[in-house]
Each structure stands twice: as C-alpha cells, then as structure tokens.
Image (cartoon, rainbow, N blue to C red; front, top):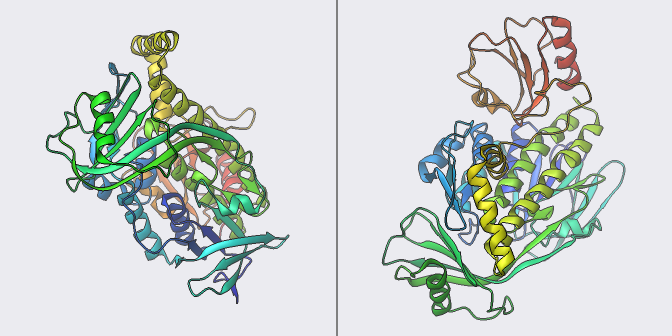
Length: 486
C-alpha cells in the first residue's frame, strides 16, 4: 500500500519515534504548516518507564516559546541547587534566565504536553507501526513500514527524521555507525514507595563502589537508580528489591524504607555519537544521534534542543523561503553540542565513579577549583543548563550572532519568548521598522533605550545583529535570513 504524506511528497515529513524529541519536532513542523506523519512502533501510551527527570533552563525557555512551560512548571518542582560528589554545590538562582532552576518532573509529563500540542497542530500519528527500511532519491524518501495488521505500507515524504532512540532503525537504514562504548553496566532501576521522605528533592551520592539516585514522580512513588561496581551482571539478570535497597544503603546511608516496588529493571549506560546527523534527506535527532550517561540530566534536554534547531529549518526549506543548504547547518551547529555533552556528562560520571587514590584526589581538586573560581563554575553551569552554547557565526559578524537571545522585554509583546510562540523570526528594533515584512516575521521594539537591532531565529538564537542606523542594512538582513515578503 502506497501513501503520500498529506500534502504530497514534495512537502511532507515522516518522523520516526514518538519520544520527546520527535513530539517537539513534529509539533513545530505541523504548527508551521508542514504535513507530518509520526511512526511509532509502541502502542499508544505515555510510559512511566522513562529515566529523565530534569528539565534545564534552556529547555524551559524553548518550551516557553511553545506555550508549554507554565503548565509544566505547575506540575513539577523547581530545584535551585545541584549537588555533586558530596560537598560540591552549584547555585542556579542567579542564572541569566527567566528559569533560575532545574525543573524536576518525570519525562512522561513533558511527553504528554508535547503530544497534546502535536495532536492539536494536526500531526498524524501511526502507532504499532514499525519502520523496516527506507530508500531515498533526489526528490524524496520512501519509507517501508509494517502496520499492526501485518501489511507493509510505503510512505513517501520529502524528508525523514529518525528520533527512534539508541537502537535507531533509521540510523541503521542509512548505514551510519554509532561508535562509542558502554560506560556503566548493570544499573538497576525501580519505582518504589518510601516510608521516610528524603532530605532533598533530588537525592544522589556515590560512596566507595556504590552510587544511588532518588527522584519523586509526584504520585507518591520514587524512581531509584542504583549501581554497584562489583556487581556486573547482564541486563537480563533478575532484579529484586533487596539488591536495590542494599545499593541505596551503601550510597546514601539508608534506604528510606523502600517498599512495594511497582517496577524493576536493569540497563547499561552508553556514550555514543553518530559521525553525521544527516545523510541526504534523512536526519537524526535525540538518542538516535547521541547517547550519554545520565549525569547532569542532559540527555532529553539535548534531544529537545536538536528538534528546536532542525524544525524551523525544515519548514523554511519546504515552504521555499530558504535554500536547501540551510539544512547543512543542523550538522555543524548541533553535532559539536552533542560531543560536548558527551564529554561533560562522561566527566561527571567518571568523577563520581572514582575509586583509586589518584582519581579521588583529582575529584577533590576539581571540586575545590570549581568552588573557588567563579568563571569556571559559571562555564560548567552554563553547559549543564544549556544556556551557554552558541552557534558558529560568519567571519566579521556582530558578537551577538549565534548566541542565545535572553527573554528581552518588548513593546508590543510582553517579552521575546512570547513573541516566538508563532514560530516566526522576531525582529527587535530601536524604533519603527518600515521595511520588508515576510509572513514569518514578527516585528517589535525594545522596551528601553537599547539601540542594537536584533533578528532572532525561531529557536531563540540571534541570526543577525546591528549597532548602526542604516535601515537598508536591516532590510537586507531580513531578506537574507527570513525571505521575501508574502
């Protein structure tokens, strides 16, 4: 059975995988008027088996730009301090963001909000539909998928994005390797009730050979993640509550009266990254492109940032506003970020796993240095929260180009991230702008006396900035980055 993604193969996108990365991407595309079909091999349900519990400041800004942050903030719990290695504390209360905290909330709550947005925007979902292969040519991509009734369907689209996780079928179909290795084996997971409440919202520590982490679901249950260096068994080895309690006692000093586990499992944590996030008309995002250790809670956040970067570019190309070469920027903007996250999360977990005298001394020295040197602490904090990443800018560009735009107070809209909710570029000027106004451009003015003109991309990064007063320069920038007037 042959099917064109609604709107024709020249415009549609197939997204493979209905996790948070795929849901944000699909919702963005549909909101921009691009026909989208999401293929998901699992049945339709929001699973509580996810491992992510942290939504960092930069991701909250992106969710704010989609009108979702307020409801998630109401459902989660803010944490203004992060603790590492027992005594090291990172204060988030002075972050240069509206969100001066990390939001502790289960991943399934984020997925639920993103799915509702995607459905409202018109995304077509096909559950229990597994991709079995794909081929591409100069005009599009043909996806082969197995339907719930056992029949094979052929879907035709302009582009395909694989957001189908670490074991990505899409990645294998385009022949991309996934180099890396397992860092931690035999990590145990469980959802448990506690007789005693932990002293902090997130509780984590490593002592000797043991590590444990506790986080609340909000429904009375807690997710516990534990690991013991000397208990290295296969992922399919049985798990019982006694093992989990023992690891927790060793790492945290007590097990808080764990009881009534509703689910237990075992997994291993890898560090891997695909060498390319694009092969022709096929893209990778999220765990299909990179996987990291859970240290720092950066995995889901990095995937959502991938989606925010790629979605507006696909929409601009499919609507004919931008040259297809724009899609190449996804690789050189996001691949270095994935590599940095892999290194930083790997560094944290290796310091947490330190056991030899020299490695313990290195951990102590790092903690001391971070506590004593504010610029270094700010750099580490900006990486973990995602606020500090910037994208490459052309030679000679304004220093703000490629940087994240803060939540600027505006004259017509209240602030920048409200203005971004239409998925458009936002032009911020010192005074009235009388130039070209493409349909996908929102124009507003600084609230205050700033004289810099900013053109902000739909993902909240500065595309162009100018300190002069020649209106012709702004006009040229709008035509180059946004497109012609409708």
